Image (cartoon, rainbow, N blue to C red; front, side, top):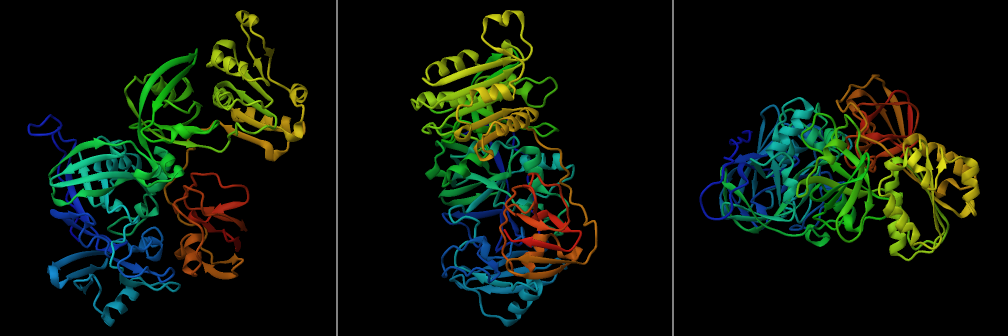
Length: 630
């Protein structure tokens, strides 16, 4: 397979000619005739409304999920793919003869150089060839699954509405910087590779129109990445856990963007990329759900930076999407600082949402990676953001008593909740209890007091641990709240809803106190402070060679595990089982299952599995096991 040859970066100076100056240059074009296999580099190509001719026209059907009728798009789950079959790495496909009305010839090349030739008819169907059927099963079949080369008569993109994928080569270089090893851009399997943008700047193009040569494109949404990007396109090796690096260092799982073709035309490598009209991001326009658009990285504009307290800064963001405007009181957003050696993402509770810019308030920490940077932001700058996230929220229409216990910068959800209660003309009985070092360290104190004053049944209890002489005029209690105080303000402990926010030690202590006072554990919600966990995303070998007996229930499937079996998820799928899974890299937590026996992780998980569960996608047995299928 000829490797994609990427041209040099474009000139950064303003260029003469009509229209705006180009932002980048088209550095490569990639086409992948067989979904899941490597593809071919093109110097030029015609881009139609349905994308590149022959791109992902064929797939390796697994016969677990039936194909849609010929001519209709079929979900990727019906095919063998790199995320479940990293051994597909090193295999490729190319078109060697496109005869137009008479069809085309496709050549598949194995890792050892063996070639398999087959013919596509004019209508996109494959010629019947028993030899081809036999070799495909030999190359790609497994004991538990068949492999059948199939043409659905439709392009087999991951999503039916997204024919074109675009990769920013500067972003690939930034991921390689963190991985401390070169990365072949082909592992991202893009149709168009562009160069000249800053790293991650493609996320600022969501909703924008692009002009490349004769072609107009509409950028839809970012591309969420799975274990397929961990597979070396030449060898099939999985030494670099790209999803783990994305989630652990950058704080999200996205790289590249999807686009639709608005105006067909010819593309040639080396042509300039121009930005046209930018449209507001909407759920319908981007074809994304509320959850999906919240998770999507996007560039928000800073509209205001102000000092909220002696050691706290407030930043207001204008979100290009509707996500922040629909944030619920208690949710948080994530900011992503780019170009730093340490993980540059942090979570900040939204202290004011609704109409207008969303606001966060960050406490300044000397030597911090993110908070000093936030304090230096200027109005008009753009920051990569995701969110809102979190389920520690309140319903302003509830009528049961509410107790909000916060400490330090944890006052931010209390602000959002107070504003929401005022907006909803709530008459809930509410007690806001806040612990602060001194009065000058209390962010938005006047704003909080004003909001609480507008609520007919709300009280503010301020606890100051190191009061200054000038704090005497402010009503407060000295020290932290104890069990006696909490009990004294809990009129109906059994029916009270409790929200906690603050340092982990504060949250633990207050949770124990309110439970001892009679509040049910199911009525306590909290959002403890945390930063990225230092984890090792470098794959490790299995610590024990086994063999071990693994039983999956309730199906009763039994299998013998050895290092060649891969992870517990790989082993299950080799037995024909279909378990819940998504990223397959220890990042998302979807595959968490209850395991009876001992296991070890091949990569450290980026999420903490709930007690008694294990992430099957990245773990192996160290004893015989019984797994409760998720």
